[in-house]
Image (cartoon, rainbow, N blue to C red):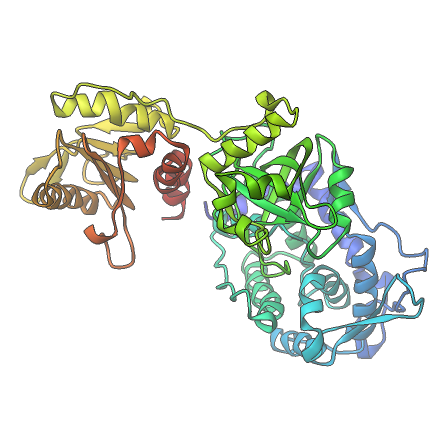
Amino acid sequence: MKFSKYVWSFFAKSEGGAETIAAFVDWLRKDDEFAGSEATGGGPEYQAVDPGDETVGSDSIVVGDGPIFAPSYDDLVVAANTLDVAQRHQVRSMEEARSLYESLLTDGITVPVDAPPPDERLTLGTASGVEAWVPQISGISLGLAQAHPEFFFPYYFVRRFNTLEAIFDEFGIPLPVLPARAQMRERALYYCELNAVLQEFRRQQSMSPAELCAFLYDFAIGQVEASDAELPPPGKSWLLIAGSRARQDFTSLDEATADSNYSWQGNPMTRRGDICVVYCVRPRSTVHSIWRALSDGFSDPFFYYYSTIRIGRPLRVPELPFSAIRDDPVLGKNPSVRASLVGASGKPLTADEYDALLRLLSASGCDISSLPRPRRPDLPSDVSLASERDVEALLLEPLLKALGYTDADWLREMPVRMGRGERVFPDYALLPHAERGEESAAFVIEAKLHIATEQQLVNAYRQCKSYALRLQCRGMALAAAEGFWIFRRGKNGFSIKEAIFKSWRDIGAPDGFREVALAMSRDAMMRTKSSA
């Protein structure tokens, strides 16, 4: 949906909304209560702080049931030192704001480190410190926002960039193109790109800096964040590695409770509900626990590892040593296992490999009945097909229901006008809009009894493509006794050479079903439809 000033005004005038805005007004140190020198452009006068300074408290904003904005102690240390530098500069335009940010990145910001030796200091930025700058963007942006609230916003989507993406998509805000993983300086500068877009959005909507913060961290988040109460069935299994760079990973895992959730380096192809097998490197060298993905995988320019997922619902399992994994006849063939699991975080496990892991855990005394398993769709194994309707009723419709569709989500033989009064009837239109003259659908499917030859495939493809183009579909598929073909619409339209083909036996297995679900599950179609 687009941003609605009418809906926003209701929130801003509500008790909770007004409370949030007032809290951010106070947090940003506005008005005359904090009068800075002329050189600061009216910003607050703060001193840089050391980690041992107990005056740095939990500067959180709490509304309703809990905090909606809760900077960590480390963020506040970085923020105070950033503020100490930033308030010495006058900022009167977005150009000057970007120039200030780039100069800080080039010259560096020095912050104290709460570790021996006691006077050790870390430089964020400069050519050698840009990697240290990127993960500290929260603290840096907090300091900039308090120094110059009219020109900087506090970035507090730490390892939650997927939430920010959803906000931009939901409210029609153009998201700048993400830099590549290896482009560290561009990743550091990406904050400037986000800041420019959001400041323009703020001015267009006549928002104050505090209202922009309330929009991001209260109003918008409430529109886009999904509840963790119910997860979709697992579609695939993934390896996650703990302890390769930070030994505190072990402590976090050992102290995890049923309610714990962490951000972890993962695979962008991970989908919410998937299974995550966590393996601890040396000196442990064991499988530690099995978790569930609470979010789809996503890229985060301010997360060092870039590729991120959020995991939760941990189930501790008996320690399974690497030697047992390496010697297993199935797992031992996995490329990551053969490489001693070096750099394996985010690597996939096939359904057979995960089953092998469960067998090893069972042999070690683990009750595997409570452990999650990849979903296997309930499709008939032996069917007698005598007509196209048999293909539809016995194969296609059970598949659609396994993908999350209900009878109300599709229309059989949807009437469509093509040219001079000609009417055609695509077999299935998913998520259709049937208003005369405005017909559209997210996806169309044509069913045939057999597609056994190349010519039969070409003919069926051309027929289905004509419907898909007429209905402005983002995808289409062919179903026949031989299997299922999926065609996604790219920049250059549809291509028969880029088909995804799965036999019904393939679809009956978790890995094959997952590939189909990624292309055309109901959730995927709804996301595509909303962004079209």
